[in-house]
Length: 102
Image 1 (cartoon, rainbow, N blue to C red):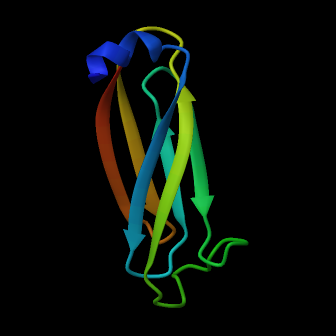
Image 2 (cartoon, one colour):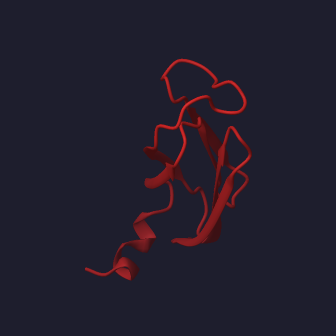
C-alpha cells in the first residue's frame, strides 16, 4: 500500500501528530498546533510537572519532550499544519508540513 491508496480513508479519521522538542535549560515548553482547517490545539509541559517556571528559568537541566495528539479533517484537501514550540524564556521554533486528506 501507498499513502495515495489510503488517502480516501483519512477524511474523518484521527491522524496522530507527534513532535519532539528539546531545551538546553529547564524551561517550560508550549506546543501550539494550527491544523490549517481552523482547528487548533496547545499543551504546556512544565519542567516540574506541576506549574509555571519563574522567569528566567532558575536551573539548567536540559530536557526533551515528546508531544502527541490527534486531529481529524472533515473535508478532503491539502492542509498546512504549523507547530510552534515556545519556551518560557521567549525561545521559539516553528515548523510547517503539508497533510493531504482525501
